[in-house]
Image 1 (cartoon, rainbow, N blue to C red):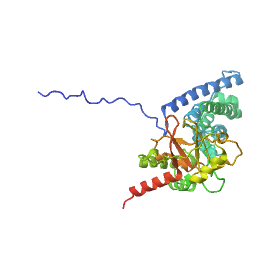
Image 2 (tube, rainbow, N blue to C red):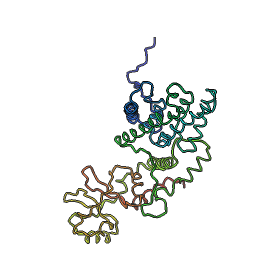
Image 3 (cartoon, rainbow, N blue to C red):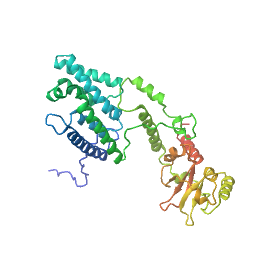
Image 4 (cartoon, one colour):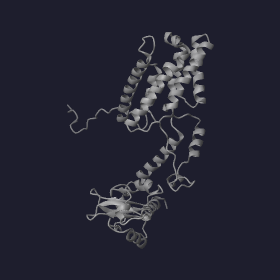
Length: 368
């Protein structure tokens, strides 16, 4: 008779919550989205009720607003969730639905034509919005409420609902510290020239993204500029994975030339020129970092360095060195000051330090 296997040391599998299906989504973001939709839909209905007098024959909300709220609060960076997409898409589609219901007598044919022409109209007007199809279908199929409002139904309540929902969405996202309406920041050269920023010159360019999208022949719910930013971030994460073992403490300069806050600009400039460096950490009497000065700051008139301090770019000794790459290639920072938990300076990583170390690591990893 065999004894049952000993399972006392076998780890029990814990139930795992399903991950949100959208890339980059977190449960915190989903909770914020739920809260935003709850508040916005409720307030939209309340405001419209006050404006329309709570007439039971008049709708306070139209059903497509629920779908618009999903986009507005769950994926606010989507091109389909921007203010013009919501307001223009819903309103234009409702007008299309009203027109089709009067041109085509058969309800099913009118409904199909309404949705099809709504997609075409929204595409031309650059306000493609999936709930717009529902708005077109709602109006095309008609009903007592649509009949009561007639040609005004696309404006009241559809456009009215859409405008109130967007205004509440902007306010909510601002309170939640989300960027809405979403605008992908265009990379700008810090020196004011026509060249692209240094960090974007070697990676995929905008024309590469556009060519790839044309080659695939599919439509993706992401702006081309956002896609380019995502590709650059993927490259950065790949560098971190490849060179993550190379830490700041491995490559930093430890004999750091610094200056006291009471030093004069002339004394600080003499230190920069004597040691051929471009940045000086400014330390108090206990060695704590107060800020930094370079030639740009020292050109301003002042009695002491204390009045010329610029914010210092800092990092921890145990941080991966390649993580400093975006900072040291932004065209502004020439060095990152390495500090401990008490903000005492323990080292400095310059552009030359990082470039030389990554070059050696690349050569060591390359096949002979």
